[in-house]
Length: 252
Image: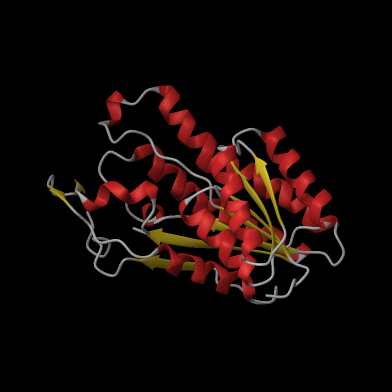
């Protein structure tokens, strides 16, 4: 694919959804800055982006560190000149234990990665997208089915994903004056390292343990590419992509 001149930053890009989306965006001509905590998987993913015909830079980053996020954006702009797309994908969960057994450290770890990190990246994207020429860009937030309904023993993850919906709405509103579009993709059971345990069985709202169907992560990547492809005067504000037979409708 010919270089479009567009530039994407993808967080959590070393594996799973982030890696699949980075490679898919590369296939559509985006140069990609890949961010993640683990340097080796990140470099492997960057190699796949380059194999798809795109320029890539791997930037080991803890998105829960505001200074590290600012450095990520500086390196992306240094390498590629601008930022047209941010995919806020990095995230983590806490152990699925009863709420009274969660430690403050476990709670804060999820908040830092899932919510603070998304905000720090959004803040940095606003600074860059407002100042570049032409002005503007798009931010896609990875919400979750858990932005709608929880799984058992998932308070930190569910709370942060509900908060991401608020961040999406505020960003979408505040970005209008600067041609910054913001949208959210809520993903259910994409096959990745994070959902591997679903094949053997996970806790259900009725107290049972049952396996759940998963879908190919490529479907998520295709959806993100579509959302990114729209002109800035059009926006998929919210999209849900899920395994058809997963227990979402009727969950709880």
